[in-house]
Length: 79
Image 1 (cartoon, rainbow, N blue to C red):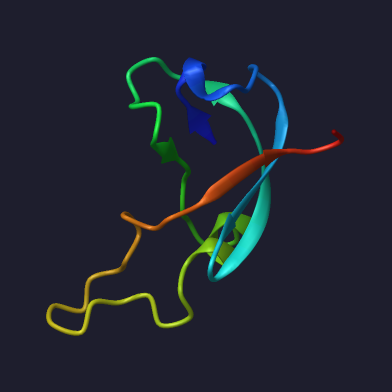
Image 2: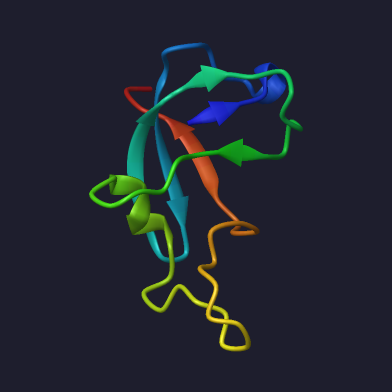
């Protein structure tokens, strides 16, 4: 997961990311180009990050996957 350096995490930290739909673990990569209130995580088949998405991950009007705009929390593991 990519996070802004001001987010309180260090490069290489192991974190749990949680949404209303599920959770997954990830390793932090810092990226100063992101806003401090944004995380960037890849979604692809087989990736545990898919647990973060709704079970019906499409917008009814156009059938597009909902892969952005989700509220999430990030917590350091092992603390």
